[in-house]
Image (cartoon, rainbow, N blue to C red; front, top):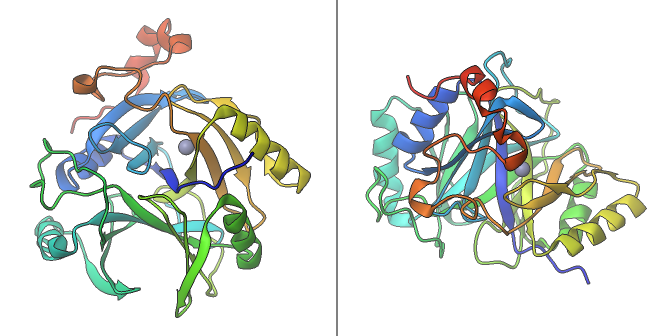
Length: 306
Ligand code: ZN
C-alpha cells in the first residue's frame, strides 16, 4: 500500500564554490555540516550536507559544488526558492544578522507568515519564514539557539505545466490548501517540511547552473514503497529512475511532467546512521565501495577552507 509522503526529505542545489558554501551555511546560517562526502555518480565532485544536529529528514540541504559551473538562472521548470523555518519572533534578528554580513534581504509576508528573502553566495534563492516547527535546532552552532533554523519550511516551484505538477503533488500526498495571488499552497500531512507553493505565473525558462535547485526529495517510509511508487510513475509514462542505494537512504528520481525533478527517499538509515553523532561531517566520508580509492579521491576535491 502506498502511503502519502509526510513532507520534504531534502533539497539539493548546484553551486560553484565549496569553501564559500561551507562558510555561508555553517557560519552565517548556523546549520551543522552533517556530511562531507562525494557525489556517488561522480566521486571527484563533493557532496555537502547541512541540517540539524542529526541531519534529520526535513532539515537537510545538500550541495554539489562544481568549480567550473556557469551561473544558473531561475525560471521554469525549477524550484524557485527554498524556505527554512525560524521562530516568528526571530525575523528581526535574522534581518540584522544577514544585513550585517552584506547580504541583501527583502521582507515580505505570505499566508500570514513573515518572510525574509535573500540569496547564498552562488545566488541560490533562500527564504526564512517565521513559522512554528517541532524541529529541535542544533544547540552548538554559532546562532543563539532561540533564533536557530528549525529545518526546511518548504519550496516554491515554477512548473512548465502547473496543472500536471499539481496532479503529481496530489498523488504524493500534498493537499491543496489555499491560494494567495499567484501562489497556490500545497501541504503534506507531516509535522515538518510540508509546504510546496506552486507559482502560477508567467516565467521564462530557467537555466540550470550555480544557484539552481537540482531536485527536491520527499520522504517515503520503506524500500518496498519505493518500488510501488516506481511502478505507479512508470505506468503513467513518467521518466523514472530505478531504485538506488544512496547509502544514507534508498531513493528514486522522477521527472514529473511539469519538469521538476523529484526524488523519493527513505528516512533510514539516515545521514547520522553511518558515523558517530559527535563526528558528523568532520572528515571526508566515503561509502565502502569508494573507500579503497580514498587516497586518489581526497586530494582532487576542491578545498573547504578559505
Ligand atoms: Zn537527493
